[in-house]
Image 1: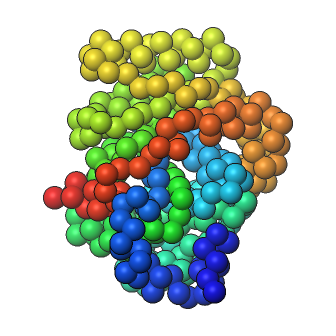
Image 2: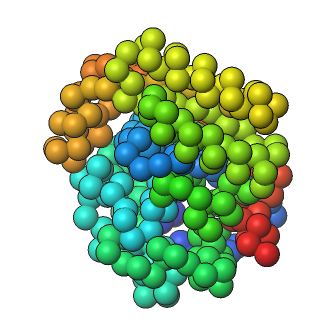
Length: 293
C-alpha cells in the first residue's frame, strides 16, 4: 500500500499513475498544494538561503514540502542542501527524465527539483517550452502540502507567469538602495499582473535592526506613495557568519547552527501566517498556463 505521508511514491514508480486517478480529479483544487513564490529584484540578496531554509523548516513540521529551483541553468539550491541530483528541470521539460527520477530527497525529507547548472535550455524559455514544463509540473500539486518556488533574480518570462498565478509572494531584499529599488520594480510588476497577490517583504543581511527598519520604511513609503499599496513586513535577517559557514558546509543554517541569529530569524519568517493560506481558486500551474497566453 502506497504511503503518501512518507512520500514512498518517489521510489515506487507509481507517481504518474497515482496523480491521474479519478479520485484525485474528484478532489479538485481544494486538494492542491499551497504554492509560495520567493523572488528578488536583484541577485545577491540571499533569496535562495531563505527558500531552502523555509522549505526545510516547514518539512520539519511534518509537511510534505517540495522546493522548485526555478533559477534554470544557474541553480544553487542543491548545493545549499548538500545534494547532487542526477536529473533537473530541463530533463523533465525535454522528456529525458520523469518527475520520479528528477525529485531528490534532502534534509528533513524536503524534496528538490533542481533547475540545473550550465544547462541553457530553460535560461530563456519560449512560451511553448514553458507550457510543456508547467503541464509536467502540475501533477505535483496533488501530492505535496507546500511548494516553494525559488526564482532567479529579476523579471524573466517564467517569473512573471508565476507571479500572475500565485496568491503569495515572499520578496527578499537587502537594505541597500539598489536592492530596494529592484525589489520595488518587482513588486510593482507583481501587482500589475496580479492585483490580488499577497506579498511579504524580508530584509536580508541587514547589519542591524535599525538599518532593516530604515530600509522597510523607505520601501513602504515609496510603495504607498506611488502604488497606493504596500507589502507586509515579514521581518529581517541580520548579516551572520553562520550563514557563510552553512554555505561552505552545504548544510542549511537552521540545521547546522539552529541557535544562530540568522537561523532564529529564518524560523520567525517561516511562521508568516499567509504561508498556511497560500492556495488559489484553481491549481497554480493551470493559472500559470493561462498567464502565458
